[in-house]
Image (tube, rainbow, N blue to C red; front, side, top):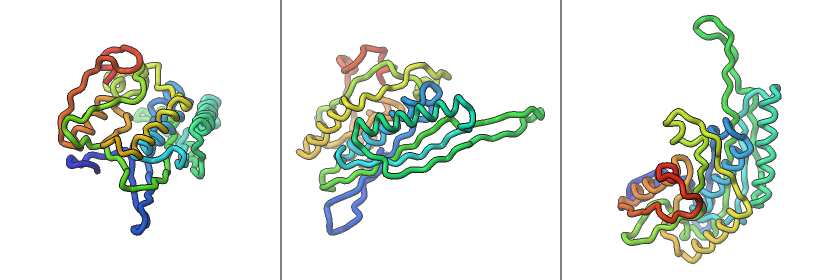
Length: 251
């Protein structure tokens, strides 16, 4: 819980040794709704989210490791096995791009229920193909960590990265009883440069607050940082980097 408003952050920082300024940051990424469109992108986004959350808190990309937790349905079925294969390919590609090794993990397969409905008909209910990624990072100076709460009136607000028409599997589409087609695509090489630049700025203490845009999008991220700091925000959606799309899609 961060800021005067006590809002849930996306990462946790702990200092294991009281006589040291070094700290450990822990975060997670999970997007099971993306699996209905593409499990490769689902896995890539989970990794990117777990890493981005840690970086936004002040972690160095050079000192982050990953853990995987697969929660899958029956891999005896060719479709489910194919989905699993795509997710594992994404784990390799994304971790290699960020140079963030997997150090452990676990698998939970065959999360399927077979039974009967109220009319006695046979039914099968399966969990969506789900991958939870946990990130574990090292922070050299705990005094340079960054929380999500905006702190000073008049501070400028920057958005890093591009906004695109990638609302497939989003909370907004689900609210409107839709799935969509386009989930976010992770460009690991491009993001890596951005995260490294962000870290350099954080070490110079140029950033007073930061929040990783995750579930709910830009709109929810702005609300969370405002509530956490108990300060209002004045923003314009004009000239955002990326594709010019509808304001509701942008948010």
